[in-house]
Length: 299
Image 1 (cartoon, rainbow, N blue to C red):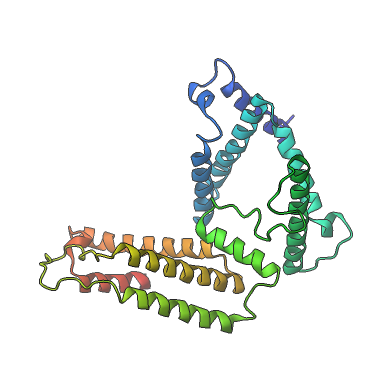
Image 2: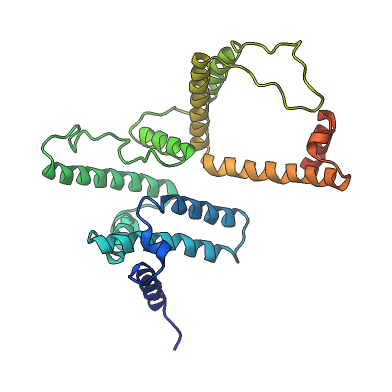
């Protein structure tokens, strides 16, 4: 009789428990919640890379590695008596049903946008309940459940582009948003101008300072205070771009990852052409590199 999905899952849970048990794997046994956080992040990005590459043969393995992280956390929690994988699964099933009342209840949502609006409303109710429950165990609260910030629950540890998207989406949900694209384009030009104004204050390079052929460009010497202001203006520019992406229904993280892949492919094509001539990029003049870059775009 073929093995069921449930039995396979139970075998994976039992295997993880065995690795952590006395006589198990020394490396697995010494891990903690904090020590494996970095691996969780790495495995997440490896899943994304397999999806980007449409590597369907590799993706099951990468998803398994990501699931391993869940089993790892759950097993460590079971050992300390806080929760178990059963609690994780129960929470997941409950959330799936609760957050899809248009499927499991009598709420109507016929378009993706309507589903998202319902989702945000449900998330807000959920955060309010969590705050109310926390208030029962803590007499002094900075914010009551009624006055909880609309930005509560947005993690500060996620990638900055993702955090910016979530913050702006939460703010837009309560009405703090641009009316349309025209205002965003104006804001973009405003932020570009402010960044340019700050950048103009960077001390110019000494034209008499020797610069060897094909050596890296001289590094600009930016005073600390000016560097801080430029960093702030650049951050403002990124935030506006994230909002533009949101209004255009584009995920900024995925958009930048796509451009990164495009740059990687084109630059490696250039390297391959030069390598065939026994050279490297640093052996070529900038005009030759630009010519190769244009060819790479065509390729």
